[in-house]
Image 1: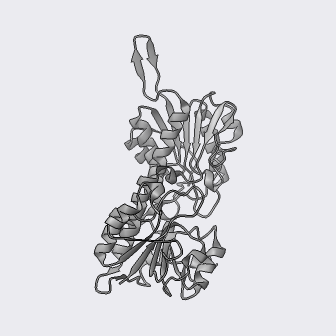
Image 2 (image 1 turned 60 degrees about the vertical axis):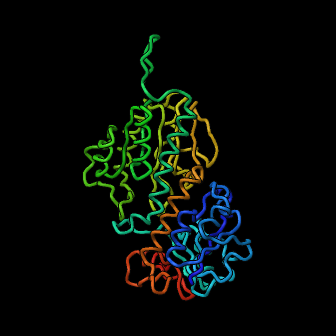
Image 3 (image 1 turned 120 degrees about the vertical axis):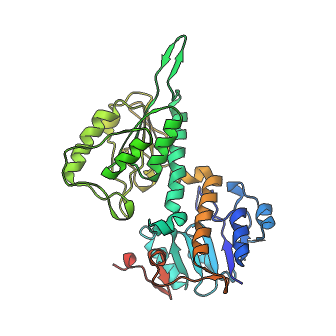
Length: 376
């Protein structure tokens, strides 16, 4: 019987867990035995008793990975925590392959097959496994809610006997999964919303949510669409045109949400200190890219920074601030991945070498780092 171990996260500030009672029950139904490290789900409001009732066994930290064929985690654990795993066992987590190459090599040396869930390809067949999308969706929502709390004024237009209160103006920069959710959330709260992106194809998405699309015009040959639906690096001509457009628009905004990321590179700078200085006192910016260097000049993870009377917010780990829901979605992503490759006769996953999902996520195998992106 395949043994699956669920780790308690050890990274500072990480409150999520890689399984929930719901997914433990589903994994047991596949024929696996589940061992959960004691206290793994407490910070996400999933007590040990709930995991036990779902069919899991609670184990101490020094025993949870003993004999485990599969280890599930949110963030990549230290290799020492994997001692006792079965030879060739699977580690399935978000592993930051580009940012932690030394640790990936240690996984290889330990004989672990490391699978990086953040490298799930954005194809139709893998949508239910896409951890970046599920977590970004919640991050976009949380950015708007916390920006609204920091703003301290109302979002919708209110007509009263004493006069009319205008709707808050919200500008979303970067219209991926997080940006689209930010638009939708701000609209539901009654704000007047506008949005921009370097990818021309997002104009229709913005407008379908009832927001105003703000785009650079008359800069030929730039669509901004990179591989897998991500944004690509822009030309200097486009950057200059975008900076001019943003400068004229941002001064009128009450709240700005920035979400722009380029895979494998620092977050692009979207808002400069000079642009901040043009904004109204009391305005709020929420920088969802702060952990990757930040879209906003002066933003710092987990700190409220005030510059020119403008408050800049951003979390190093935004999904962790919604630990219950983000854990539930992440755990389903992992279950969907395992279920898609589950061999019911063997009651174990089978990962075909020629499968494009497997090729995208497998970092190590047979004692070596095998992913082409890590061997260049």
